[in-house]
Image 1 (cartoon, rainbow, N blue to C red):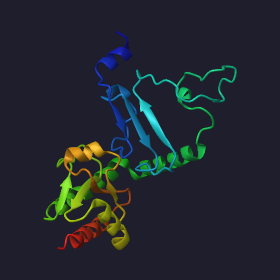
Image 2: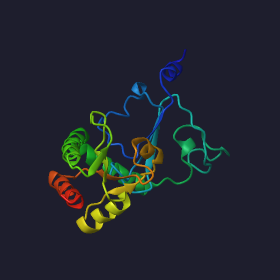
Image 3: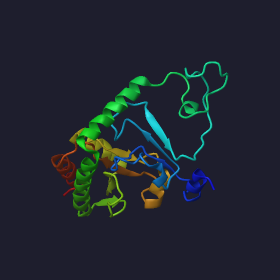
Image 4: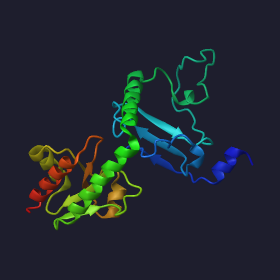
Length: 226
């Protein structure tokens, strides 16, 4: 059995939507042989500090993806078809060069900051915030209690508030940006019991501090009437 076939035999076909991934392992992409997934797709404009309109797809060695767009690539103009070598089979026409440069700058910044340490600090802030939030009678917190394999994101609801209304109040009255609703994942919200309206989601950024989290907690306490 060839090496790629052996890897495929031990790997479940599983694709990961990495839009909210915080890469707490800086060597994540270094050794795809260790993966238990087939592909990771990610966007650049969220945790990675890049501009909008740029993202990436990383696949395990044995994964084959057929071309879905066709056009010039500038590497083999005599070939009337789309080149089939990677990554050109998936990259037709002129690339988003400004987006690539911007994403690269964001990644450089995060690496200099220390991605692993920054993730550790954000998870410490989140753990404390979750504990404090869970002690409020009129607040329901969702998600795993264990933060071992977690990113600094937390969903919750305040009794008596539609999550959309709560999000607008936090934004307009307290200058706190959250995302409310179903978060493009209605089945997840159904599974955790907050469908059909969803929840309030707070996401910690690279520069979130303890005073920021204290301000969110104070706002939730006030909205809960405490």
